[in-house]
Image 1 (tube, rainbow, N blue to C red):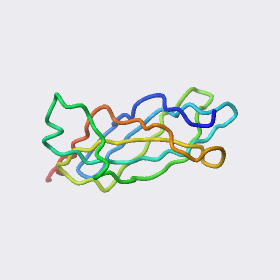
Image 2: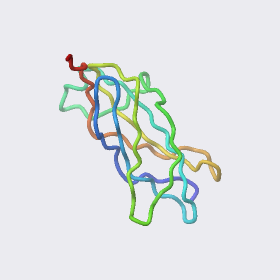
Image 3: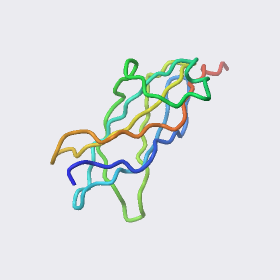
Image 4: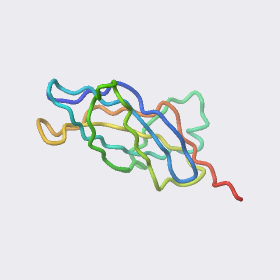
Length: 130
């Protein structure tokens, strides 16, 4: 197999006014390969789209940007540990969707896998005042 396969969804661990902590399970890799390069992207969603319960969650390419990349292994002796990533630089009182895709970092095709999205929006709140 020359491509990396995704196996789940991106989970939201926490969010504040300017950052969100996300996690996902490692993607399935070809036999004998143990590292994957993960690309984390962010898309801002309009408030009207976020508040429309009948509308499916959509990725807005016009507002998307790269939040960072991570190179990580797949499994440990104790099973699959989730990979965690902190997305910084978010704006307060906005809605966001996060996307993760993967590829092999040093071998094979360098194309990215099909992405996984968060299943829910993240709404960054204004910071609490003391």
